Image 1 (cartoon, rainbow, N blue to C red):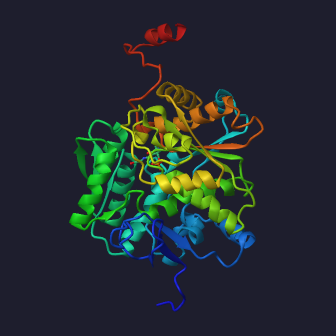
Image 2: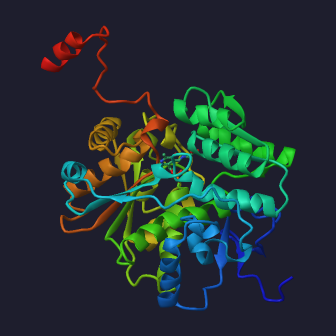
Image 3: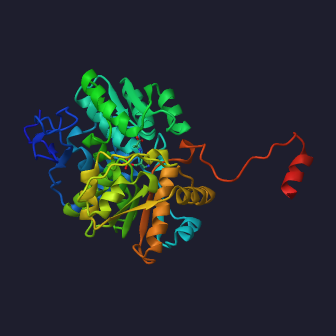
Length: 418
Ligand code: F0G
């Protein structure tokens, strides 16, 4: 065993209580506190320049732990774990330029970080590799989550990789078909709860405590450590020259919180010298965080959510406080977009040959709104995060329809002539 002090530990965001990094409690264990935990790391000793060089040198690695776009940044994720990690691998997602999407959004400098290219088709894999690694580390016998679908799919896959039983709770009739199919195929015990996501999360927390199952919602601070690498990887892809804005769809606010933490650490550790502004985008019908933003975060709002973007159909986001800090500390903004805007943006992204699920399109619609309002300027360099793959939600398509024909060439010609 090492005699060095551990490079990481957990801190309660509410009362400041410090606990070891391998403490298995999902929230602060201090009586009557129950605050959200955060992982803190000692700053890596080598300084920003050398750390960037370390991360960059690993980009050519094809095999093993460092081939992962999460564990490539392991000094910023979970430095003490070494090579004993459960990785698919994940990450290494493309940063795309698309003229039609940039034009529609009115933002010439727009790039798309496509997290739908992860193994289970969403950014959740970045958090789950860390969460399930931590689950094994603390000897968990089973793992669970509540989900609008993507977390369930990811948890189911990573639990299967680890040989751990998985329990997922999803809101009945509010989960896209692709996500449910994944959770079932990977073998998770899947409960369709008669209620919404917020009900599922309450129930999952109660059930995991009662049944002794490790909870892997984004309450879990190790998930957020993995999700930070969306930001680290896009900064690396831009040669550590930060964009002016990072725009992200916001539901339970895990990503918004993780992005804020990533940027704060990247600046403190000397990886970047300027912090991009964060823009969190909610669907109009599920926008409690946007409401709180308008009050200067003096209130914490809750709503009964309703949006076509089922992934972000959330009324009481669990990471509200840490996401508010992320917005404040990056001089960020929170905005909303209507379901019509989301579907229009999705059609543009899809027809550009890129494709994404509805919640992801909210980010692109958000860029357009912020451009129109002059919050983002024409000259700004903007990265919008596409959080999930087109195939997640095959039911929410555009106007293009297949044409049925008999099996002969004349029929093909007839259709092609219009
Ligand atoms: N985009 C997609 C595709 C998502 O699946 C989610 C969240 C978000 C955006 C919002 O991210 O919660 O970090 O603000 N999906 C969760 C789930 C809630 O259960 O799959 P957030």
